Image 1 (cartoon, helix red, strand yellow):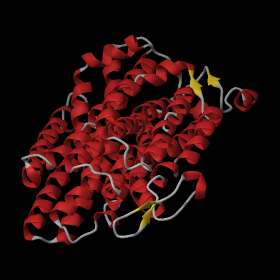
Image 2 (cartoon, one colour):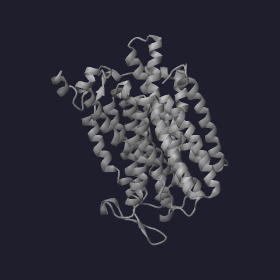
Image 3 (cartoon, helix red, strand yellow):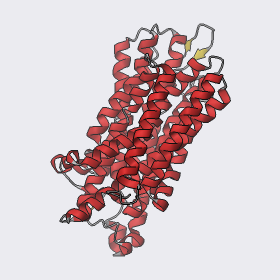
Length: 452
């Protein structure tokens, strides 16, 4: 056994016998292998999120260096990565069982070099067309897509009792990429980070020199490093193999769609508010510099996601999720109240509470999925119950992640539409109440169909 652990379970290899629910297997090496794969996955996912939200910062500075795009075009550059990322997540959610977690993590991480290198060169030319930038923005969606395959992959490595914590760490620390990007980019565009290798700076109307190319180039070396680490340090699990046809059974499961709705309310809110927060602050409180405070929202949400996973493992995912929706609805009411009063501090605190609870809910909803599908297959007396339940729950984790990511597109668009801030907040309150009812009826009440 020890010889097998030293040789067959090394990074860069396929593992043919993976039994995380076997306590002896888990304690005698399985936990170490799972941890190694998790701690390589986390920084790779963090970089993916950083690339995904590059445009939320870049568009703020583009007019200063001579790009003649109107507000509608700039808003599209912010929204397009969310739209493409959400759509590609649907496909990425099925890739790990087809290609293997190690291979797909390395390939999907390497793909982030395409938009970052392209953007780094394109942003240096003020004559670059909007169409070119739109294509680059769509390609930045590759970063958002990585989330579904990453979460699907990590779910295979951990036993059901530890998936909440593991997925919470992977997603929560990975989500930090949003705030890392919104913090790092403003810091690095002010000086020549790479010297002559990265090109000259761009002169603003006020006479200040910016190096907008650094917003993209700063990620290139870390992406290359994580690609190599993923290829040589992670593992493929043969037990996770499944064709798209085998996984597509999830589309006929009622609870796939219910969990998509519930995760839309948590992660959709998190990524939607992350994208819209700088713009909403700018519109509601013009005297406040949004780039100095906006990164704090996604930072809080990401840091509280592992807390949500831990709580869900301890007291149940459905119970945590239900109360998350209650607090989110109350928080939106508070945000509306302080916005009307013109009180930025109260408004900001309300938003921080929204980010915090959405982060907790992101983890607790994902903790519910493996429990629901394990219970379902136990009732069906499915052959090969454990593997079938794991494959379906992994596919649902990825697919729900794709579905929910559309929040990153629709929430900013709602704020910019005729609904305005009050209409958008009112619609969100109604949606959170609907999610409370769904969670209570199907999963958290006494006698619920699938207590989780």
